[in-house]
Image 1 (cartoon, helix red, strand yellow):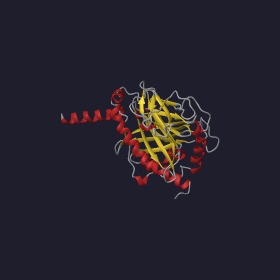
Image 2 (tube, rainbow, N blue to C red; image 1 turned 90 degrees about the vertical axis):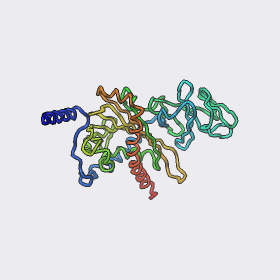
Image 3 (spheres, rainbow, N blue to C red; image 1 turned 60 degrees about the vertical axis):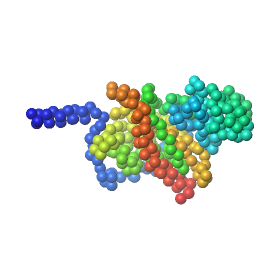
Image 4 (tube, one colour; image 1 turned 90 degrees about the horizontal axis):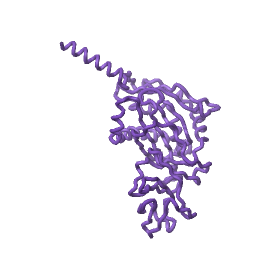
Length: 343
């Protein structure tokens, strides 16, 4: 009887593994992985980066997670060396504008929100989305439900667009998380990091295994149709269990790179990495904010439970993203230092 139960339990475990997104894989000793430096061609990465930097942006910059901007107080940011203040009106609408009061330069981050306007605490001057005076004029803003954006035409210098250029997302964005980190580099260094998928299992062995790049852009004549990278990778869950997927990396604009799962568990899910230039820091070096949005989806019926547990899942997703970007920021900062001869 015990033997029968043991066999039945084993059959049940095998059946569960066959249905589960988790799959067994043979973990490799880190030092015995197949080296990828010969595949990670610097000339190819440079060509892909140059192509991405010629993409239009419409002068839109990611400010922060949409939920980070609340109705009870304004938030301040620095983008391209300019102070920007963001707030919401009573109906939840997003507004942005210059961060200094036009009267005597008081910080509008300390202003009082009154319906759709800000009241400066220094002398009570009122500014808002309907101002059109040359001394203080609101900026165009956009809220896509996951991220808040601002359009700064004087910073971007391109032909403006009515809305940011956003790649395909899951129709339901309920399960999402946004993490934000700041590093000493420029946006192109962030993008270059993501245009090197070969470093994944070497630099992040705690997260990725069995990584194989199966398609790359050509060195010459890169186009919208052929600029993406395609790879097979296993997202590691335990030492010997992971979730194998096929993922594609594309650049919808010069400061964004998107990883989209095209086959496997979570098909259609995306990780959007946005790089927002902040301006020089106290040491004169460039500063860039990485705002990364993870938007998860699944065709499995049980995913409805993940939607209900989204507030509990966000800290876990953010923890994983932050861990990855602490490593990748060192990569981007090193690249910036070498490029600008600051080391």
